[in-house]
Structure formats: structure tokens, C-alpha cells
Image 1 (tube, rainbow, N blue to C red):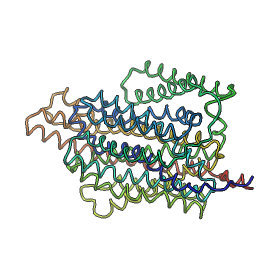
Image 2 (spheres, helix red, strand yellow; image 1 turned 90 degrees about the horizontal axis):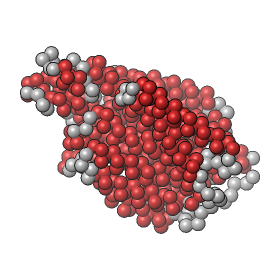
Image 3 (cartoon, one colour; image 1 turned 180 degrees about the horizontal axis):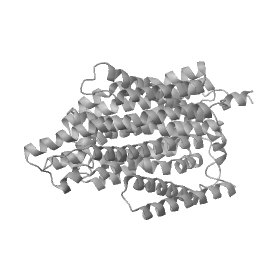
Image 4 (cartoon, rainbow, N blue to C red; image 1 turned 90 degrees about the vertical axis):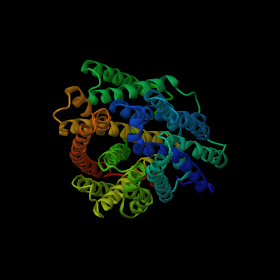
Length: 507
């Protein structure tokens, strides 16, 4: 069928939704730089730090599909504006949280707001841009804004931490929301096509509880924070709830999620690409932020400046991906970008950050550029595989992959980091066994223990911690390189038959 006339306001709409997406990205990356300062200020344990970081993406992973389908029922504009208000309020609560528990609770509320925002952004882009070339450019620009937000996030966060308390990195979202909210209110159309029928709240609850149970069970199992029988029981409950959810989708006249979307190999490839790539990127950022501050004794601002090549290059990867995909095909661009990213990670694993020269910044820039191309390629693959009427559902699947990748990636990196660090740490022999075990949990715990020791003994423990983390850095980045290399092969195979849906519709 012919492609409908393009919306004359489509580029203004794109500006509005990109502005709405910006605070969500800022919140993710600013926190990485703040982790060491936050850990010291709240006396947070390694487990609490992991929960502070990844409760946000893990909870969002369970909420995104329900919120995306709710937006289809009541309108993207209404859900988006509500999400922005919730996100801004939660940011203020997080900024003044007096304890780790209260900060975790504020992050839960942030997840609710973020889950309202993300599927609406991608759904609006898919519905607004029917032309394949324009949609690739729009998704590339969307990716550029997201990466640019990630680029300035650590830098702004570092600058704030130079002069203010750790909560300022959350408080920054409030003035951003005061600008973004009115912009979206004015630019987004009040007239929207919506899906008829009631929102299936029972199916939504099944999906949310099932996703959270499975992910929490996996997290507890990897982190050894719960006994194995308890972990198995939680995972089994989650799987049972998800199976029941799938059965209801297959039998319902008005299912929440069209399961036929998973029959598209390109959608599966895009979801895997988004999950693994964003997980690796989040884990690498967390590792670098801790190494730069704990091992190299850089300030938060200096750490943010050091990471600029990674994030700045990621900011330009989106438009480049859209252009290259049109010239050489999505399959070649996506798989080749991931192969190069794997090589950059391997190079960083063997690099000495004490003497970075030009080699380390160049590798960071290459990594940011290629991972950004891979992430934008995942968006093009997913959004190009469905017709516009299913853009909201496809957008929620992609956003879910992003959040699952971030949450699981940080969890696995954190657990792996703790395990590798504990094996590599050689504490001073005079340190008591109890304190040695506590210091071996993470480099943050090493500093907490060292602060309670006499000066000479504390300095020796910190030196041992720095040496252990340098070894940990090599293990983590080498593993990430292998993981991204395998992903490149998987994506090359899954995208063998990719063809954009708009081309099919126009035929």
C-alpha cells in the first residue's frame, strides 16, 4: 500500500521526544561517577551499591511493556507527561535521601517514571516517520541525543561533585524536567489514535511480577545473597507467572503483547544486540569510574573528563549508523561495528591507565563509536520490522532489552568484579580475618576498612586494593571483548533475511 504523507511537524515532534528521553539517560550515567562518593557518604555496602544502581533498570524491565500498552490505550502524550512529572519528583526525593534504603526507594519511583517515558518516545518516532531513510535518521538522532546525554552526564556529575554533595547529581534532573515538561506539552499533538478496549491490568501484573521474580532470582543466585533453594523457588515462581502470561496472551481476544513480534528474526537480533551491548557498556563505564577514582586517585570531575572520548564518540555514532545502514545494509554495519568494538575492549584490557598516552583515549573513542552504531542498528532492526500500528509494542520490547541489559550487565559486572577482586586482593598479613573478608568484597569496602585502621596499615591495605583492582580490570574487559565478539557472529546470522517493513508495505 502507498506510504501516507509525512507529518509536516514530524521534526518538531522528534525534538520533543528527544528532550523527554534526555533526563532518563542523564540519570543513568551521572550515577556511575557518583558511586564512590555516595558509598562513602551513606556507608553503603557493595550489595547496597548494586541495588542503588540496578534496581532502576531491573524494575523498569518489568514495567516497560505494560506502560507501553497503557500508552496505546490512553495516548502517548498523557503517559509521557505523567512519566516526566513522576521522574522529576523522584529525582528530588533521591537527592535528599538520608540513607541507602531511602535512596533505593527513590530509585524505584524513578523507574516508574522512566518506564512511562521510554516506550512512548520510540513508539512516537515509529508512528511519525514512515519513510525508511527518514526513520533511520530520526533513530540515529535519537541515539545521538541519548549518547550526548551520557557524554555530558559524567562530566556534569563530576563538576557537581567537586563543589556539592552527592545528591546534586539527582537534583540536576529537576531543572531539566522544568524545561522538558512544558516543551513536550506544547509540541506533542493532543489528538492521538488509541487502541480501543480496557487495559488488561491482570496481564500487566502477571508480567511485572514474573519479570521481577526471574531477574531478582538470577541476581540473588549470581550474587550468592540467598540460599540456593530460595533462589530456585523465586525463579520457578517467576517462570510460572511468565508462562501463565504467555498462555493468556495466546488465548485473549485483546492481548497486552502481540507475541507474533518474536517471529521476526530481526526483532530478536535487535533485542539481543541492545541487551548485550548496553549491558557491556554500562558495566565498562562502572568499572572505569571506580578504577579512575579508587586506583588512579582522580577526582569525580577528572574521571568524567577521562571518559569524554568514550561518550563523545558514542554521541556521533547514531547518525553515522543510520547513514551507513542505508549505504551498505544493516547486517554488515551492525556485525562489523560489534567486531571492532570487541577489538577495542581487548585493547583496553591490556592497557595501562596510569600512562594512557593517546592510545587509551583512542580506544575509548573507538569503543564508544562502534557500540553506539550497534545500539542504533538494534533500533533500526526492531522498528523497521513492524508496521506503524505496532510501534508502541516494538518500542517497549526494545526499551525492555535496554533496561534488562543495563540491570543484568551491572549485576554481572558487579558480581564478577567482586569475585575477581576478592581473589586478587592480598591484604596485609596483620589484618584480622574478619576485616580481610570485608575488605575483599569490593574496592569500596577496602577503603571503608582502611579508614578504621592505623594510618600505615590502612595505606598498605589501600595499595593492595589498587593492585587487585588493576588485575580485575584486565579480567573484566577481556571477558566483555569475548562476549561482544560472539554477539557480532549471532547478529550476522540473524539479520540474513532482514528487510524493512516500510519497503514491504510500499511494494
